[in-house]
Length: 471
Image 1 (tube, rainbow, N blue to C red):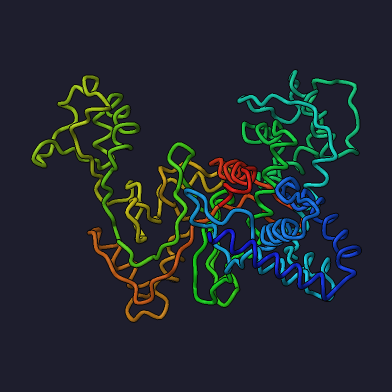
Image 2 (image 1 turned 180 degrees about the horizontal axis):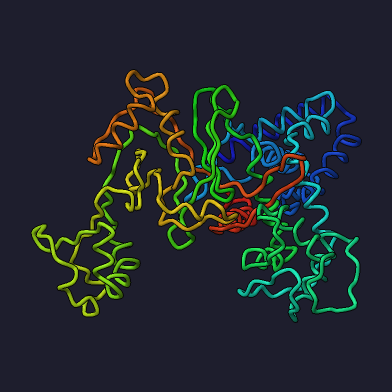
């Protein structure tokens, strides 16, 4: 007898026992349960995954699947998503038995759904999106500034009128006037962007999102909220990629927050659970070969002397240093790049003055940066995968808090030496790099950020798979 067959028989026995003990279940409660399963779409789930004939065993199996998905998530594993972590997931058959033998089966089923304010906001958004008709808008790349006249403005007005039905019509269809700018600013803030009214490529991409695309993203975020792993009370750092945020928590309270710059889509910051173990002061930068070939080679072709002036050194065969001004860089093919590039420590070094090591085999770490301008932007996907910190010295304070001889005076002395050194932390800090596009602002309003790496879309595709293929 297979495991599936044995489970089916056990489910049948459980249902038969429940029906025998509770004759009314076959009528009143059964109809209520079926009706709730038919409304699975309200919670971002596909009712077709839980359809079942009148056979009590098949009904129990479908009920168990719905109960498990509603309470514990439809997706439990997904490639490239180690940030999907849930509490222990019970067997579907066990959940069906618990519901069917409860004093109030429909209530027992409903109690499994998440109760968080964010889940409620997403559920309301899903209902609103599915009841709306959105006019099409084709995203462009040229920014539309407040007060401008542009032929795309009429389509933007029509799209934003769905977001805010109070938006008045305009006598000048091409004019990006003050009333439209005010609504556009609210739209930007609702999507994690600066509310400056300047409609750049990210604002336009979000305006171009279709109702089906948005509904799928909302459903994916709802699923991520089901039975999340219980947060640890110990000091833990969480970096949320779509929010470009760093939050350190201890005893369930924020102890340090800051902005971060993360990897651009072509060099995405990988999601991971790891540990911060040490810091390096005045770090050199060993340029990864991908960056050397794709980013540095064009700079070397343009001005090798300026390249050297920024502290970069070129090493050829046998580790022998090469004067970059003596190389015909236009003759060097990116696929056959025979050099190693290293940047000396210093104020111009890409890693800044301090680097924090994370345990991983992808050469991903957190670090200072001399280039501060990106912290003033709303979308901060500009790095080659590593995490640039807005306030690295406060990260130093956190990592070495309570460690003898590692106060700020010690840090300054290490930096002033201008030589590379490192110190291990007596208390390494767990670090989680996660991907969550949905959140609430300070007023409790939903914010749904841009799916910068396409992880929401991949999650939604996984949710749409047939029952036998869902992880």
